[in-house]
Image 1 (cartoon, rainbow, N blue to C red):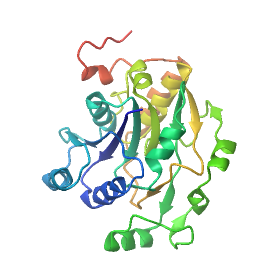
Image 2: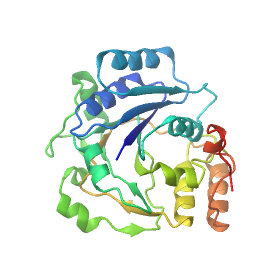
Image 3: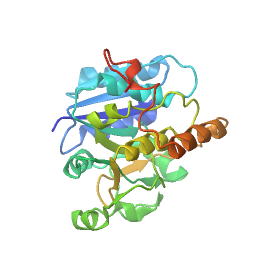
Length: 267
């Protein structure tokens, strides 16, 4: 099965470099890697050019003008450009375990989208990671929060992976789905501006189309680089959009990936 890894980023080339280095170490490579860039400066562009010229990754750069936090549009543009049957979304601050792609593909299942988990690096560990350009971690390393997620076990994954309609802990920093299912709901809702809830609302529409959530525990491991939280100033407005999709059981948004795919019709 072909697979597109979509990496969101914005003006943090130091983190993106570590993420791309971890992609190079994958035991199973994605068919393509697309950087969903929400308007970064030229230094990010130069970093991506460096990896295109010096690595064998099939790497594409999808850029949009910086007009504030527009993650939905950035992801939609990148997914529209993708060719893989399966889409894996991560953020540009997620360092991947070497079996990350392999695990996601092993646990892909029809009529499901997958929510992965993460290990949080604390601030001191993050400083050390940047200094040493660390992309591999031990269970016993200091500076790892919720380190139980570091345990890797296919048996435990099968035991704890269950279908659910829950929205708790929905995050696109480690999420995967069939591209066809994404198109079915018209991708991410671009009515969302600013941080928050666009990932949960996307999940709501998938669930309303009987595409259920499945959690991956103890596999598809990724390490989240510490950073300060984004502004919540648009959260109240975004909460209202989410609530409407939940209350009205909306299955498809009108302002989505159709903006970038020719002949795509919202039905």
